[in-house]
Length: 111
Length: 111
Image 1 (cartoon, each protein chain N blue to C red):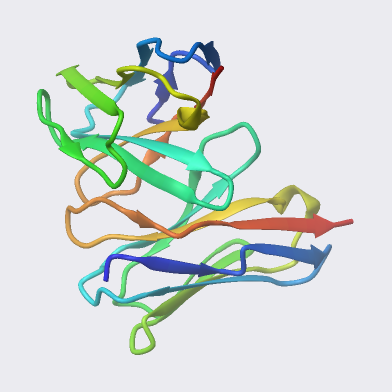
Image 2 (image 1 turned 90 degrees about the horizontal axis):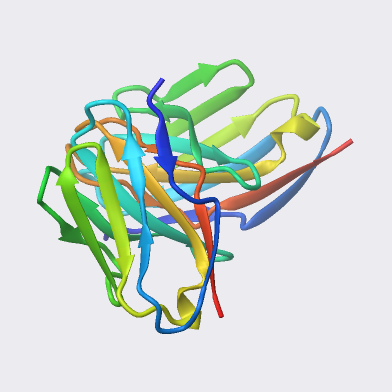
């Protein structure tokens, strides 16, 4: 089975800090995605990538950036964390035209 | 046109009953309709998926019903069990494009 690993389950950061969320998948998936999940709002796409060094904005990219230097790794960066970025962050990967495999999520609290 | 509307937002079903979650879409180009199941503290996991060339797909107690003319699809959970208590997301995509998710349904199966 494909495994998507997110480096941290829980993170607490201070307002203004630069935050890195790491995601690694162990199969040769082209596509990788970052979502945030908030109660009542479902899954909202932040950024996605169809290939190494490629990135595209999702529905809510403001305040975030991403990096994909290797095929298996997709990093989400909060340039200057704010309290409204407190959320559950989910990484996913997929092959073209196939369903997604999600990681277990990182619950980020910004204080 | 890219939205997938999911209902209800929450659902309580007695053990042994049938759970039904509905989704509606506008984009007639959608050709892949998966359902994801998410337990607390975990990422969503692919449960079952359907393509529009069939009207129904069954896997164990889980069935997707698809109505192409109405642009609706639904998840039926037969003989619902307390272990089915989770959040369920429908989704849709076209070709190699990214998935569009519904807002989720929180299911509680009471003993």
